[in-house]
Amino acid sequence: QVQVVESGGGLVRPGASLRLSCAATTDRFAINALGWFRQAPGEQRELVAALSSGGRSKIADSVKGRFTVSRGDAKNTLDLQMNSLKSEDSGVYYCGASYYYDLDNYEFWGQGTQVTVSS
Image 1: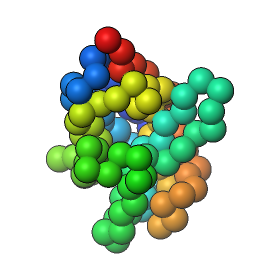
Image 2 (image 1 turned 90 degrees about the horizontal axis):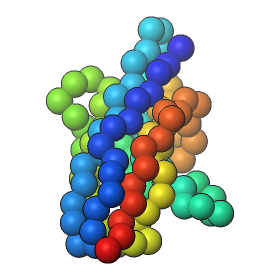
Image 3 (image 1 turned 180 degrees about the horizontal axis):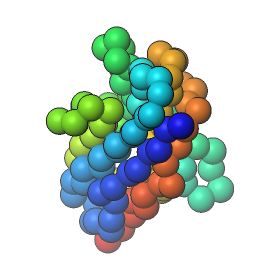
Image 4 (image 1 turned 90 degrees about the vertical axis):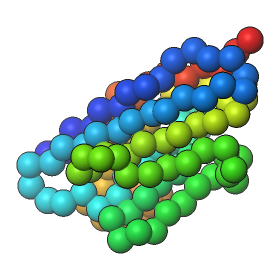
């Protein structure tokens, strides 16, 4: 089984920065993709950024130039550096983990961490 834990959310003002971290643990098969998604109230969950162990990456157009995704120092970790935050970036941010290399679909999810951007 795979466990996924997110950290780093909070309340910030527009223009500020936040860094989210995701850590996945597995007791059997290798994790080959990790991704960050977000969900605003009344909206569908959407992909923000993702990386595969093979080096493929994906990032949403709405955050390009402001958000950066990278592997953490430990195995099976994924960091999301969010700069120049806007109110529309608010929502619950979820990390997904997958045994496969598909950057859009994940079998395992964390509980989510709240990001609120407000003045």
